[in-house]
Image (cartoon, rainbow, N blue to C red; front, side, top):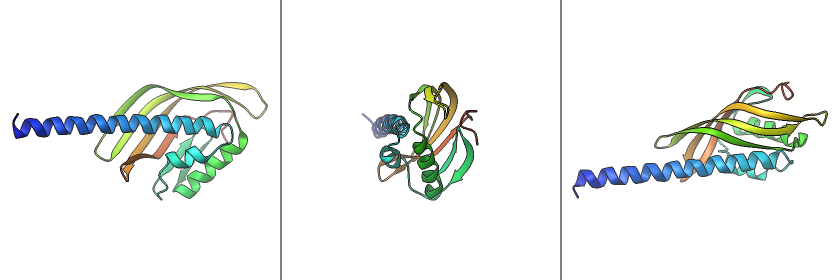
Length: 150
């Protein structure tokens, strides 16, 4: 095999490994999201980068920038204990050397403040950055949900 062939094979292998890592990070985030619906926030803290440039624009509205503000929003949502479960569907993944973008539809259900079960089907874009060899969420942006909008 030529040097160019070996380099191409190594590049392809690295890209496949990065995509697998991003898929794992997506799974970690949605596991954390569902745990957050029960009031448990530990997994969400693990899924996110704690950097000052992270952003969150969730189904309740607003635009939080920086880990402290993003965390405060997750804490407020965890306190609601919405219950239910949401999973990604129709995922599209784009992976670069240190950044990845995942677009999907979040589908499932939650309970609103009145205790009524509400269906969830919203568009989401998730951004990840490789930090210390691990893919961490740096951005989450979704459509609004009327029962959560402020």
